[in-house]
Length: 392
Image (cartoon, rainbow, N blue to C red; front, side, top):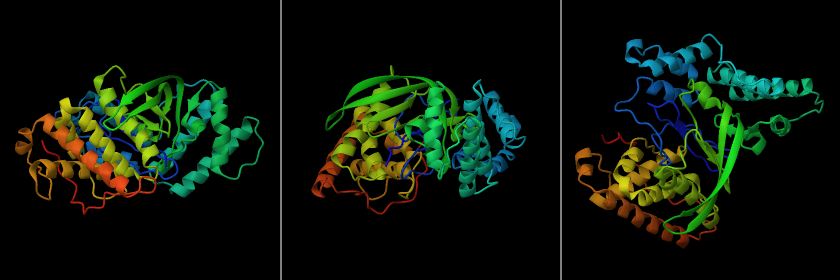
């Protein structure tokens, strides 16, 4: 299964991630900072548009628009009003923003995806009907471009679309084989990229990680389309390479290495050591690593983890967040249920939280090895409490 990484806010004030998948992807789940990525702007108080963006990232813009109608205009700042106007123009007036692409084939591909997203996001068509629509329209575009092959599946169509985009001078996730951000088919297209290899020292090993920094996007995917550009995927991870939206991640920042890079490098290490491990377990271990290496800011990071939790494995990041917060709380305070009293946490040092995370990672590793590293798939089987209200 292709590893997932977070959706990051590009226009500040609301931080919502999206998890991107391939063979067994995960549905979008809102979270504050599921991979400890730096560069995320956090407001003093939640934006009035937060519930609108959350619903849009769940793939339901029809409901997001209903919520938007209840948000008083005078509660929005200028950037929030811009987002509101974009959403209304795109989904009510059905007039998406103009494309900065001159090539008719590339522009045609993007417009077809936007038409598809419009239909499924507004629930005007089912996902299955939307897939058929995408298949039919892209097949027609290819025929207009001189390709007269007969395709049987959407996957085969995309096998032709991706290389054609590349020959036109555009990179795309379609060309790389990363084609779905559940619940919808995805399209991210960019003009330029650069590569860099990092050597990342983790608590238990050292890993080399190749990062592809993607730039000059002409399509940022369905999440950006659904939110008026407010939020979009920060990238994704293959088995050996990270694909990183350069607009979001600043490689010069300390948080880049201790947060984003360490988190993903831990996934790479775990792929090799525990090849069957499922995503909740992978996320649990990576979150612990972020708290260990980011020890100077561990308490704030833990509070961010606590701000978005979930009790089902179908939302692996949120599930892992809850498990991490619960286990660290147990390690520090004792008891079965996590302590959610902000006053009690203010008395806990960053180092104490980092040390607790280190102990949990060590115990988790021993448990996985004892269950046979090459075969173990899941270990987070404790009964989970309900999602938490974030400590303030």
